[in-house]
Image (tube, rainbow, N blue to C red; front, side):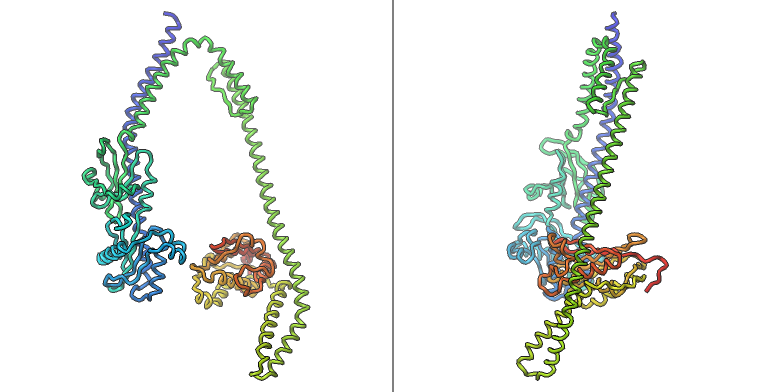
Length: 625
């Protein structure tokens, strides 16, 4: 037998036989591992969908119970009841209608959309709610009354069985919560399940199906509205799923196809989440493995038959590969490596070539990293320089305006004092019924307003001699909030104080900082007028041993982006009515700058405004005022 034939037989014995053995072993192990993986994946998916469905429904029950925690339905007036129901109704998009019931189960107030355009003019969020027909309102009242009568004493809420709405033919449930007390009434809402259905439709991947069954085993949700309306019965196909208490596996047939399914109960609702996939699709990776195994075996045999004639060129090919590798490095492909595994001189040359390529690639990577670091540092320094230039330009503008204001105030004070004095004397001399007294009173009021503007200009222009002593920041903020407590309560503003734990001491002047916080609070109150949500958050943070940050965040009208650069300019205002002088923020900027701190403002129009002050912290041994 020729050497070429012997080499061919040796290659077949050493390559084809091990490949076939490995393929058979891999088939057996893959079949077992794939079955376990598919079952576990289906269990987890079904459990996740069950938990999500329970959370979607029961979270509404929690919200309704929380809304009634401090509210007695029978004690609410018509406007208060309507406001409570509107808040609940707008909190979620999928609530079709909500109602307030008395202890006898009679509806006392309700909110639903029957005229989308009229409701949208009142509140844009109503556009995200379905239009409800009169028959559906009656059906909801009946179902809600039944659920309120069935609320357990130990839980405080109940959820109805899923049903299709009478006109829209969409799946929904009624969630009812009873207020504490024997005759306190309750709150109920109709929750549409379209969001759950849409999620199930989005979770379908390939041949996989994800759906929900009700307590009787009928199809509840699967992402297809037509199928949901037919309410297909799965109790015969999946006998163990309805009423299941834990996850399980099952198989069923549909349209001549075998399906592998996993199911999981939905907590507290009695529903069942099911994940199913056709058997052939579930075992498709195994079939692909078989095809690849036999394909590899065939390629191996073909490779062996093709390899024998080229063995004669075994010495020439490594040299050619070395030449190709050198050309790749010359083209700039520094990651190119030779996979020549030899133990002779050619192997040593290939390893030396790879070491050289690795060294070149490492040096190139370090050079690129250094360039990126240098560019980042340049960008950071440029940004810092720009911020410094902006601060310097603002300070220069304020200083120039301050000089101008000082001159104006000095020149206006004397004639203004003369005007005020003469007008007061004339008012004192004129009788009460004199017709000209009203005109003089108007002159006196406008002169006093000019005097107030002059005092503001003096505050902007004069450098105050601040004590810069250690003081308790929280005490200053509390004093300002207490002084404005009446205005906050009257305006319906909810204040949320998020102070840093413990005392926070800063270096500053108590009166000056109190005036700054008072001005900022007044601006926030003005911005929240006629807003549906009125909340003010005051937070303090210890940035480091040298700096303390104060944030005042409101839910007011906000400021347009094009006005933010001018917001600290004197006489610039964004108020809808000219009730102020446009000097408050300029004065605040001057005072904070004299304290050695900074003040910045971030605002989103229609969302709110956040004012951030950074002040120097007092040393640990500083005396507390």
